[in-house]
Each structure stands twice: as C-alpha cells, then as structure tokens.
Length: 149
Image (cartoon, rainbow, N blue to C red):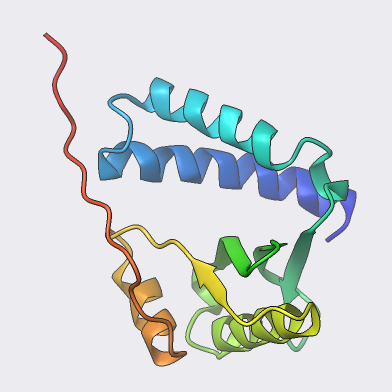
C-alpha cells in the first residue's frame, strides 16, 4: 500500500469502524464511536503507514485494479488482522480467500503459529468466509446500548 492508498484506506476505514462500533452497541452514539476510533488508531498506528510490525496491502484483481485492503499486525505471539475488506463488486471471485491465505503465509514467515481477527456479529458474509478458511470462534463479546437519561 502506498501513501495515497493509505490515506484513502484510513478515511474510509475509520468511519466504517466507527459505524460498526455504534451499530453493534459498543458505543452509545456515533460521536462516541468516532472518538473511540480516533483514540484507538492513534494508539495502534502512531507512525501511520510506517508503524513497525504492520503490513498494509492493497488487494488487486487480475487486471491490477484495486479490489480491497488488508491490514495485518504481526505481534509477539500471533498475527492479527485489524481490517480486511473486498469491494462489494469484486466479491465472490476468490479474492478474499486468496488474501486471507496470503496473510496466513506472511504470518508463518514471521515465525508465528496463529492468525486471528475480530468480526462484528452483523457481518454474516465475512463469518462464512472465515469459517470456510478454518477460523474458529475463540471468544464472544456481547453488548447492549444503554439509553442515557
């Protein structure tokens, strides 16, 4: 991923993550979700694209057109996918499967035995892909939004 792709990725990804947090009930308002997202991104990526241990990929199709993104973080004990998306009009062509397998290969090259990710419960298509690739649920977090009075 180059600087321009990274800037576009962050703009879209941060907003999408904030919406997922809000819609899942993790944050009570969209404004709170945006604040949480901004804080988490500053913590995770203090040097942006150059933050050590992170791999940012622009997924491309057979015609070398942008088809999605992947953000992989190689930790001390495992690889963790923070963000992964294939553009809607490119889904169903095997790009997601190929990308996950490439992330697993990168994790193995780093000498790590586990590749993990988080998926929001509101994303059944992603869950099916992960299950097909052998991912298993290792924990489950439930939440409920509490109305302010």
